[in-house]
Image (cartoon, rainbow, N blue to C red; front, side, top):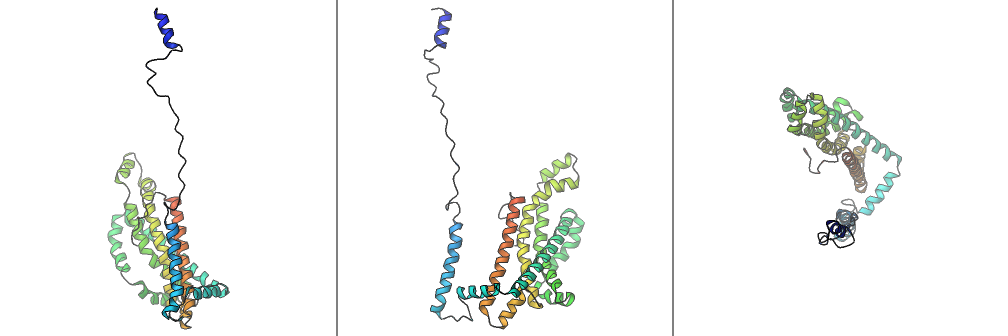
Length: 294
């Protein structure tokens, strides 16, 4: 057999010995993405389950234990009081005042914390000069300052705004300082070697590294701002949910007090979810445990 015939035999329909040992290629279908279910998020059942269980026990055990309504009202009585208050236009006025006080105080405290925290983290002299005073001021009980704020700023909204700002300031400040200092030193050095200025380093490295800390401070600060506004209304106010709490207390309307507390809790929860939603949008890489000053 000639060489041409051998080549023709190998290239033709006859079996190739070298290729006969290779298994034919098969296409593995892509697995469809697994849908999220209760195994991935057991809290979808546990959170409402715990709530329903507590409410039911609260509702049916109080009559059995003989607890009077003026000591601890049942959830049904609290719901009736809440419906009554929500149908009153004056309640919405009190709610609006407390919301504005909390929001203005929160913005004031956050703005001051961002400005001062940036200066402290970037300028060593500012830190050594101001931090002892800031820490000393933080150790003062804020409730003790509320009467002074009422004397200085009056019974209007201003004293409550200042109170909310003071309470929300320090947790935000600590998170800003620690967040700006958490930037990766290697990245900072690399940008510096390539000729980046301090502002470029701040914008490209330090600020993105600080965003998870900043949002953690915002999450704590908004709740503290609501607390500060209500505390200020306790000391001296003519409007607001804190003032309404005092009025229901004087009238022994315990169910009404619980209804106001439910509204305050909902305010805090809504503010918390707004901050968390913004964090997932602008700092999606943040870990849930990045919290300082809680």
